[in-house]
Length: 152
Image (cartoon, rainbow, N blue to C red; front, side):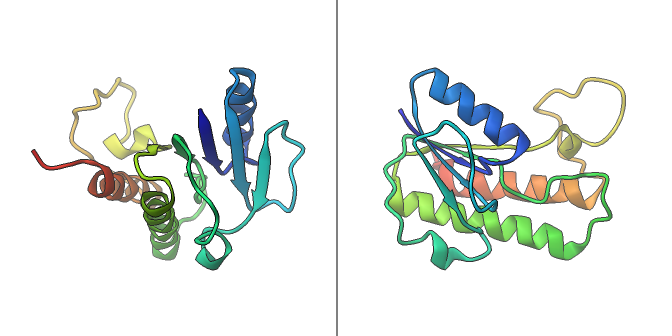
């Protein structure tokens, strides 16, 4: 499979990319770092806040992992960070629909979308974001559903 890992130079993305290559997949990684020593097929340094850097790129991936976002829940969050996460996800989803129709898209979210507590939360529990970070993840999930869930 041809797989895109957005946030491929980050902690989770770099481990995922290595694993996917080890399984025999053709992996392209995107990240904000200028370069990467990942053993992948292609790495592109770009910023999802600057769509002119990627909207003309060729697509054709079978799957994409969206791991790129402000993602440190303990930092002081602002509403601008929430909006920026949503903007980055939206730009990428629009691009993938045009450049890679039928691409399966996996979004990294957080258990914090269900609230906080010590108990396990079932995935059918209603969202209860208790922070701006969790809110950004709920909104990204909603956006993904709008792009990929068909009526009926």
